[in-house]
Amino acid sequence: TGQVTDTFTGLPITGALVEVQLSGSASVSFYTASQNNAIVGSALTDANGEYLILGLEPGNYTIKATKCDYESNAKGVIT
Image 1 (cartoon, one colour):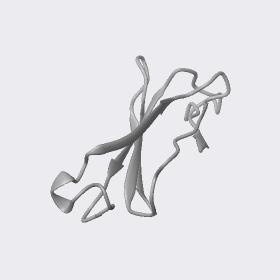
Image 2 (cartoon, one colour):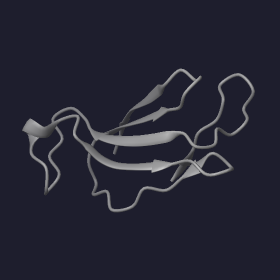
Image 3 (tube, rainbow, N blue to C red):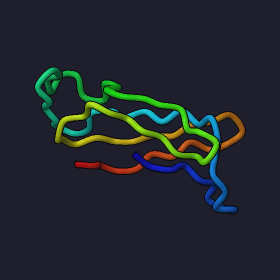
């Protein structure tokens, strides 16, 4: 779970695409190291800028949020 907000105003961003990718030398049971950067989950943010992505196993991931008219932003490794 998380929330996507505008860096300058702090307001939530509705309808942003949030993607979770395998990162580094991660190996999750159904993905191998050769599939680094594979998208393993995604969601759109709601009216409050919030999203929920289920079914992720423990591992190293990068989260990226994108929306038209906004600069995309990726957060480092999340375990």
